[in-house]
Image 1 (cartoon, rainbow, N blue to C red):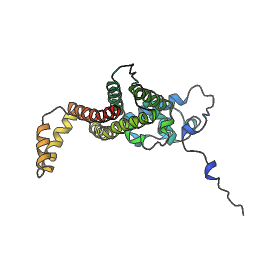
Image 2 (cartoon, rainbow, N blue to C red; image 1 turned 180 degrees about the vertical axis):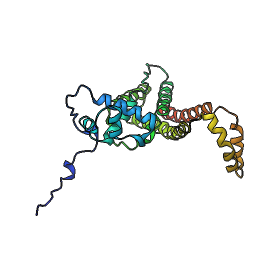
Image 3 (cartoon, rainbow, N blue to C red; image 1 turned 135 degrees about the horizontal axis):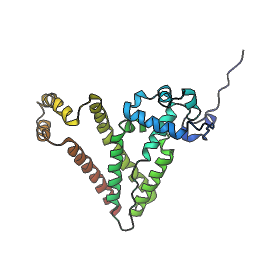
Length: 248
């Protein structure tokens, strides 16, 4: 009877598209770039649960086997899709003597806008463990570290500052994106959805005076503008803290 020999842990391949060399057979009609672009379109239209190699192959008029020549599995496809979307982020330069806060704020707002265009993105970033090794994410990180360094932060603290800003954007935008996706599935506008929700929300906060007062104040407001203001408030307070740290 044969005995199966397991591979030592330090010799097992790392399960990430970014941890292995790219192998791609010559097939002019299909490329990794084409596959990833179509995957992003599918994710935008139907959500993360709809993505499969078979479904994607059907959209590309190709068999799933053909896709596997370019992408190892669905997890790798998600890694590639996340990095593809990161390529949309605005990379704004902070010139010497310029306002680093304004630069960081504009990039943060750009990241939020990107997540709200791609509702699936925020939730999937946390699931793709080596996403930070993707070329677009590396480009983004290198650029933003330079912005913080130009402002006067040491490299290690620039790294922590960038992590704090990114975590804030993802934390706020994840909830926003989930709500926006739910509204989109309903076929209604945000305002129409809110109008339907208000009676239930007002009943829920009936015994909570502070929440009741806040809901009443927001009853006839512009939801999009309110979300923008709330996001910017938190972002500016975070930047206040970083600026105080820089001054010390």
